[in-house]
Image (cartoon, rainbow, N blue to C red; front, side):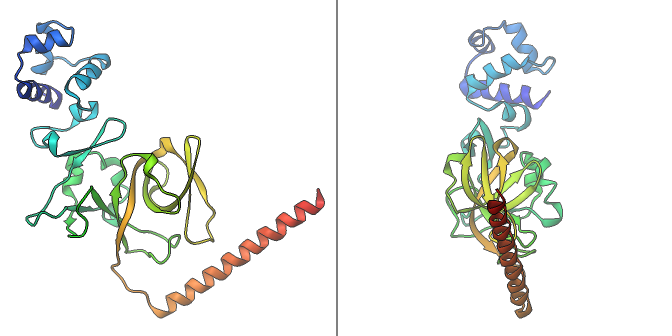
Amino acid sequence: MSIFSDNIRVLRDRKNISQQKLADDLLITRSRYVKYEDGTSEPPLELLLRFSKYFNVSVDLLLSVDIRKYPLDDMLKVAENRILLPVTVDSKGDNKIEIVPEKASMGYLNGYNDPGYIESLQTLSLPFLRNGKYRAFPAKGDSMPPYKDGTYIVGKFVEDISELKTDKTYVFITVNDGIIYKRFQFHEGSSIWVKSDNNFYEPYKISLFDIYEIWEFACSINTEEYRPDEFENQNVREMFSEIKSEIKYISERINIKTK
């Protein structure tokens, strides 16, 4: 038996319909349907889509998630017919927020849609974050001060790209850069522009096709405090940023004069 065969049997039972009735609705013979339900055969893509539309369940869920373990009513439906894992709560009714550890952050790219991987993550609960689905991601580098290595950004899942707001910060899960925390700027065709709060770094463009997930900033968790000398280092970075901007301005002026 496969996950798919188990799922269609469970869904058929929930609808309280016979194998013959389901086969008729899908425009196939009962004998052909039985092979799918007992796992001796696999349906072609066209028929998979028919199953998906009939039960109003995404194809990836039909093929990869045991719906007996994750009831459909408890799942958060997201754009493009995808399904996010259930919104689970602790004994007090607060959201369980999965924590993506820094050392395993790259593994998230392979496991973000794997129920087993997500279940293996440690969780925490924050009573003031109740509505929506939240997840905590590690901040890295110096591109988004004052957040330093060891800080966790707690994000709320963004269901649709149209929900992005100019100058709001988001955690983007991307094909090329992995987990990044940036400030959204604007849409441009099939891409978006983002920037760092550290002006030393230039804004850049991300293709929408390279984005797996987007999480809107909800709060941050600092695991270390700033030392006084780190503020001095921040001033040095700002100084270099200003010098870089001045060099760019002078270069542009020179180019204008030579034209």
